[in-house]
Image (tube, rainbow, N blue to C red; front, side, top):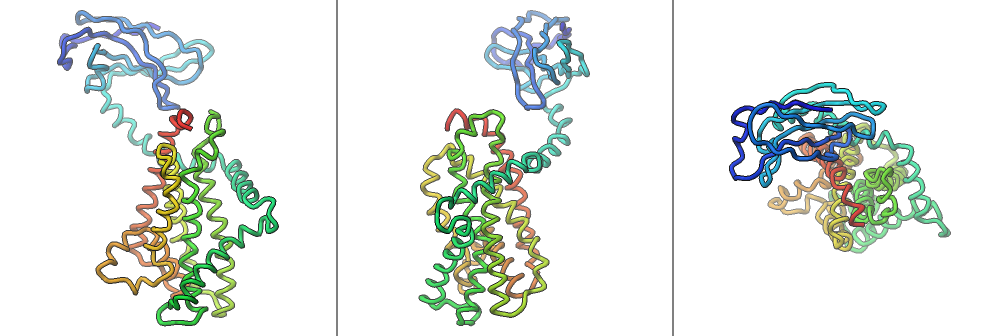
Length: 385
């Protein structure tokens, strides 16, 4: 396919350094969002009409061809704000058909594509989850069953492990250190207070504890081009949610035994659980990317989670903290989740509006940003792991 390009008299404007100027094209695939190849550079000596020959790509599909001037040392002219010829084409049965041909700039193209780009960015994480839901659920089930396979407790360890962990912390803080909740020094009162704070932490810490190593753990899948690597942090989040869900059921039975009733305010739980899931999934995507490039993160992650645990009012009341420290503690997202659970399950109230609004905004941002960064960086994973 021959494309005719007419260069104006000021065609060399913008090239500040001397050197050969040529005209060429780059083939871009919109579906992948990546440049595939570029054509030969044809030297340009003067203004007027120039012809660029674009061969028909072997594979069928939609293509874009960016026809632009290019400088030997300064690179492509469109990268410096110069206009270029954009050709939308479709290849079918060995023939290429031009759909649209227009002159534009890189900024103009970005502005034109901004609505569709934002819409794709919003849809992307949900598309990842819904498209691969069958694979995700199968891998989560296999992960839970395989975790304790061969042990005497088998699948029951999924329930026993969080119970034993919470019992250990309760013994240390409730029995040994005689911690209390709002002056209630009874073991049942403190147990309800402490275990309520552990519910969101269990789901978060289990997922985050494995996130930096998840790509290395599944390195064989990473090297398979057709495997959707971005679902691995989703699997971790859902596995942690299963463990926390079982612990939540046990907690409700314990509350019924201790108090004889459940709070009607439990209808507010989705307002806390949904951002908790988004926050955890976003953090897992980010930590999975960081774990690929910073191997030491796998080793220090346990320490960071332990520090985060004790900086969150889970085993102690936030009322015991100095007032000067409260603004800093309120910046901790896990504080908002723990506080929300306790207001709903223990005090029978809806979660506070302002802290939950802030944590919703943060969780939504991390959810979309984490997925975007993981998708952007995953192409480099195979070269590293």
